[in-house]
Length: 559
Image 1 (tube, rainbow, N blue to C red):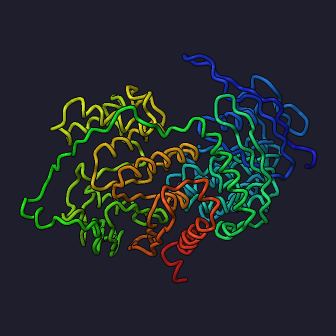
Image 2 (cartoon, rainbow, N blue to C red):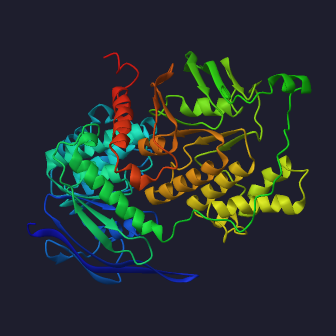
Image 3 (cartoon, rainbow, N blue to C red):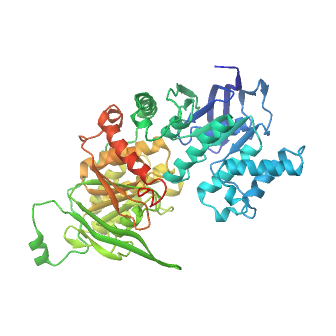
């Protein structure tokens, strides 16, 4: 490697709190060459943001040194441009004015015309030349983040620092901004340091990937050279043996970092042999006529439509959605944002009125919400003033009123143990991390013994390690119950790992099923083992290809 533009040697940082001192960074050593793109891959709480803020000069390390071109960093400077995870724009200013603030502050030695030209050039570089006079409220999330990137680039920094700038965005917007960052890297030739928890994002963009060990006292565990030829197309690299090998190595290494603290738990409590009440049973004659050992057509979506009224007239979001599921089947529902995935799910839950067609579950039409249809949302939706045990008990008390108090408590404890919360049953939801709260949501859903489990991107707000951990929790618990399940997701790997079939939806409006992929992989499935199989990458390629077809809106496929 050439002479480094950035050198970190033994960087440490601790924070003091009521519970004592927490060592966040335990001695970071890293060198970055001029013009190099390095991705720092880590998980929530591993100190990624603390590290990037130390490089930016926003926090002072306790020990070690950070050198920029051989000189110690002393506070913030125009030589380092930082893009935060949140947009941090002034809502009352236009795109042009937001970027001009940084330019006017940093380039005071330049004329007004030169500064205006610089603003225009950087805004156009991120593809927002047409939106110079718009205010942030008139922009999408992805467009706002582009303004942040333009503002950082307009400082003309030696190093561009990106602190998980895409993590709050949907998958399609995230992919488009990844392409934008790659184009900027190519055209500007700037040194870039990206903090991310997304393995694929790191491999698509970076020259090297440095993996942080988990907290406390995070260090650089391993550094990987990304030996994948540029340009890297996300669909094409899926078939590249070098990409597959490197991706498997990194994911396997990340898995080893988590193995020692895996949260998939056994339970010391036996699950009571008690069935939940059917709170809305049909007449006995109907039940007798419907009784059959056949488990096919357990759930049927028939000519399902959803129309919303708008000021411009009716808008059909979902159009002629038809799907039949067998009892015990697991379906992944995938597609770009706005394609109606969550709309279909909320109609199946009885939470959203059906405009046309119908949904039949276990021989009865769905028209109302109930505990026979358990939903896990992206946000945990817990009562923050209640403990984990009390949150799960709310549903258990309702559907097991005929069970003894001890049996109901055992049901609650059993599922909390299974999701790895055996030591946190009496912890308030308000005191839990996002990952812990989502575990409570999963335990609550399974404890209802529902006919149908509906999962609406339940891991979308979590970092990769927590996400993988909870996927394992979900797989392990589902393997025991074999409940009929539908999961909405943007994550291609997640869709394949969990499902018997992947149902792909076309773009909205008028979204419908575009393709159904049967996942013929043996169960139980192990993530590490799947990454070593050619079948997994074959399935992955089919889903990626479908998403690429619909990458530019509803007319893309026709074009």
